[in-house]
Amino acid sequence: MYEFIYMKAEFEPWWMFEDWEDTIIIRETSMNFNEVQEQLREFVLKLREKHEFEAVKKECFYAFWSSNEQVFCEACDDDLQTYHGLFILKDGQPVNLIIM
Image 1: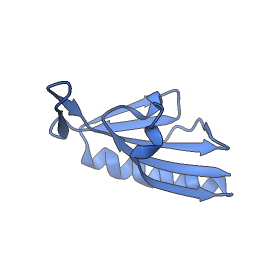
Image 2: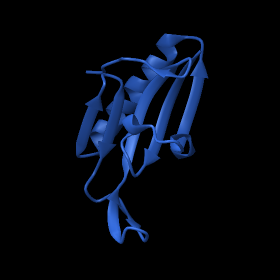
Image 3: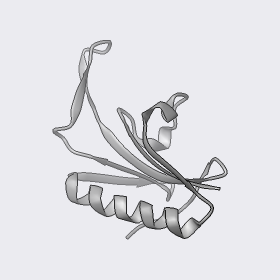
């Protein structure tokens, strides 16, 4: 089983903190790898157009962000960057896939 994940959080997707699943905006499952791969590709292209910055880590996690998209953290009394994360899981494990 493959899962396409789009998350939005105050941390990059590769950290996968304990409660990372609470930040999921879209989770699509499929038995077909080509379907989730195409969905990832479409989202990568859309987010590249919309955001100033992009990073890829471990050849599977994509993070996109813009300097003007931040949220204020009262506990730390500072602004935190908002990140848009994309990746694919297979049986709960990240899948290596680079989109050019």
